[in-house]
Amino acid sequence: MTTRAAQGRSPPAEKNTLHPRNPHRGRYDFQSLIAASPELAAFVAVNEYGNETINFVDPAAVKALNRALLKHDYGIADWDVPAQYLCPPIPGRADYLHYLADLLSESNGGRIPRGNSVRVLDIGVGANCIYPLIGHRAYGWQFVGTDIDPLALNNAQHILDANQMNAAVELRLQQSRTAIFAGVTQADELFDLTLCNPPFHASLAEARHGSQRKWKNLGKEDDKHKSPVLNFGGQSLELCCDGGEEAFVKRMIEESRSGQSNCLWFTTLVSKSSSLPHVYRALKYSGAKQDRTLEMSQGQKKSRILAWTFMDQDQQREWWSVRQK
Figure 1 (cartoon, rainbow, N blue to C red):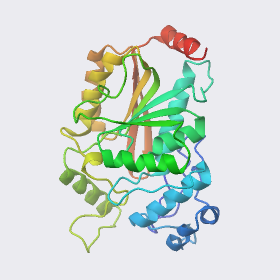
Figure 2 (figure 1 turned 90 degrees about the vertical axis):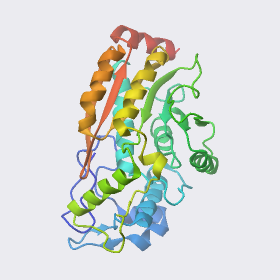
Figure 3 (figure 1 turned 90 degrees about the horizontal axis):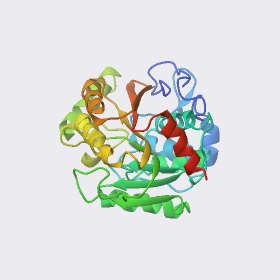
């Protein structure tokens, strides 16, 4: 999942490591994007290599690009996030969904299941609501999105209202800061997938330090501010939790045991390779029948999808034979 090495520092590269179905694999066609969303024009300039680009350090430019991509490629005409809320990179978020579609196809005779019979639980849907928006437009899936932040859910609901997508996405408030599935899912409720982009820092200071290190490596430190610019935004509930990513994913694995017959594949992003030994250990003791790690990358950032199921191959095939009736 590699985005262009833009920002005017290095020659642009094709995003050819993105999933084959990802519409963002090539260089951005800025003229087409501007035609779809004229506000983007103010942020587009020609870099030293003669290519149109934006300043990816500028949060306003990133948000304008996101609006254009969502409108041009997914028909999302009205999208915004409040200041300081996460403004996610669209190509990487789309890649997660395309890899999950492949995962579902493996136990469905090689066919990607499409349409509103496929139900997906998005843990931490956020103010941006990005996974349900892309997942429904790309595959027609139905989503339930949960979050512990009522303000984030209010913004996500506004996006759904503005784009007439209320029938495709249901939002639920998670009342507990420590629960993941408990309290927002019903005992008899079935999901084909769960997905999650967990908060991967243990504190906001750690998040800022990580961003500062990233910009230093890219030669883009912000000399005017003591804290580095977080170009994709994000506030404490989105970026941080006690124990960071490792603790969150381990808690998710433990809770998934209670719903093992209600979901085919549990999945989450794991950003830090140092988290893997600990979450693998948690999976070993969870009783999961199968787990997968799918490596991904986006620019300087490396990540992976961790997926696990409590169903063997026969049970997975039986799942689809029942779900598609």
